[in-house]
Image (cartoon, rainbow, N blue to C red; front, side, top):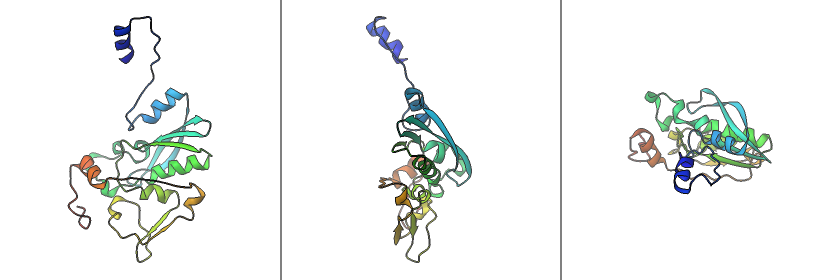
Length: 191
């Protein structure tokens, strides 16, 4: 479509190369793999409801990988009647990330569109070995509804062997509304 428009404006004397594009959600990994002549790596992960699922990410060469949350923690993976980001996790995304790190990838891009979850990254970090403990020493499960729980201890010992630093900026209220149309009235009463 863009090539056609460019030719209409500039004529046939221009050189065009079309590549697939995506918006950071479903299809992003496929688009980047195609544009960069990469290879697909498939693996089994836990989906957003902790069900077994097949996921994949792209090997772009030179230690570079691309992946998207939508294939491991994505909204299309959940039947409409079970869609509630309070019950979902990014654990499968963390499993993809861990696989890539274990394979030696050092530059990893993660597209976060199409996500079914807003767990603040707890699930993803748990898959990397981070342990989130409440004030009684109980490990948090890594689903979004655990976010209001007081986190007393974050144990990074195992995770540090996989990644030197991690950053996640979440928006619980916004994504809950976007994904379900439901607002969160308070942190103590998420439903």
